[in-house]
Length: 288
Image 1 (cartoon, rainbow, N blue to C red):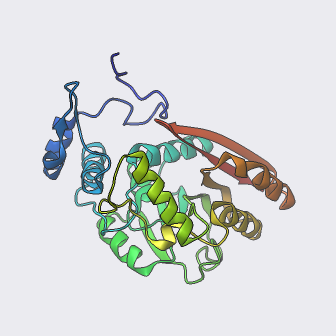
Image 2 (image 1 turned 135 degrees about the vertical axis):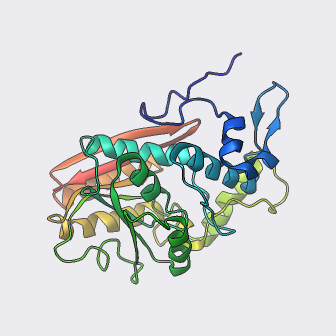
């Protein structure tokens, strides 16, 4: 069976709907060359179980699509899938009625060392961003990744229990907020998730680990607890934010999140389904 030439699940405006041209990508980021192999069907590809290869592919995608050079991650940090991350940006653009320019300000809660959403949003739509994180070392690395891009400001969240307090300043206004919340409820839960991924890929060793620091992978209450706290806090910043949005990985969380949104009296709630391959997710958005 011939593979499809497009990734039909991705957003129509995605730059990554076509099959990867590894020769072109390697030209944009030469270190990728070391990881590109031809499989039994004659297609070029990489070993997606190797985090070094995935990081090199991400750097190549950013260099090829946006001209971004030098993007990198410290060992052990989450390596975001670029096509899926760009989809969130495109769906957010739909929500914002395709507004472009630096006057569209977006807050990325938990931006991480990759600072991937601000980078893509600044390149695709020329938006300006504030990226927040509770990890000072992640922000120091993120600062290297945004060097020379004046549309992106980074702020340290000194109070991990908050999303917006201490970050959104008096008199500031954001067109939207976005977030990829921690998925797990504990370190043990996160470790078990890593083991399941390794087993699914047939890995016998943990030498090739799936990235993620503690703050990226887990928090008290997991994804559901984090988003419920975000929803409760959002009511206090209703006058300063147009749309609040977040990724939701588990569909079974939606009924309780919708209940939380009714409790804070959100006047409008929207849900956007997303998919990349077998991985399914969704963005929930609300406003007051």
